[in-house]
Image (cartoon, rainbow, N blue to C red; front, side, top):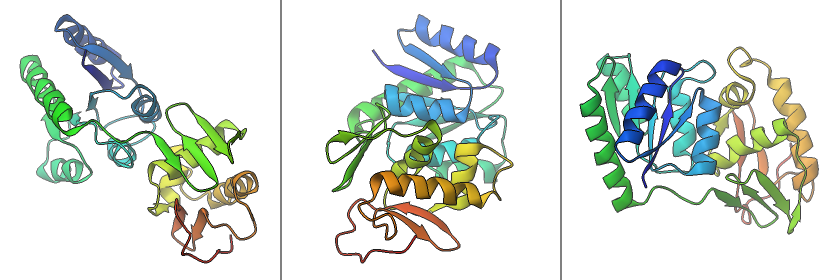
Amino acid sequence: MTTVLIVEDDVALARALAINLTARGFTARTAANGRGALEQVAGVHPDVVVLDLGLADLDGIQVLHGIRGWSLVPVIVLSARNTSQEKVQALDAGADDYVTKPFEMNELLARIRAAARRGEQGGAGKPAVVATSVFTVDLSAGRVSRDGQAVRLTPTEFHVLEVLARNADRLVPSRQLLTEVWGPGYEGESHYLRVYMAQLRRKLEPDPSHPRFLVTEPGLGYRLETDPADTPPRSG
């Protein structure tokens, strides 16, 4: 059965969509915010995501970037934003389709069916496991292991690592990390990242004073490097 994740902070609209989808043989799940959406994409592996852009905690474009860090699940944007610039921005961020509010339910359902077919043909996404030669991050299970042994992380430590893992081998700007983990309004609190990156390095890096996997790009952000074998150790 096709599972559709509805990411919508309008409770009444989310309920109406879920009822219509269920009546047509889909399994409907809902998330009221961006963090919940990312958790469900990692944990539930929906076949299609219907994503509102106007969420309370994260902007929908940030959620799109997060999903595309490791998953190819079809994403249909459902938004009141209707300018061509906003549509192009969403499509460039990885959306497969864009439906503006108000909308016809039958049209949206047809687009969901088409997206589900494309997902079946192309595969919904990559496994939610990011592995290095020393530690492994299982995004769907919310577990981290080092040399085969479980590593205990605080919820915030895991959330920081999760964002880096979803964007493995790519630079994650400090502002993005701060917004995804702590929310809007924390973009300038760079000392939060220094503290939590130091804690993660102590738990995961063979030599925390010269990190090779959880690296700093000075003035830019951070990167989780999965295969740094040919890269000399960097200072934190």
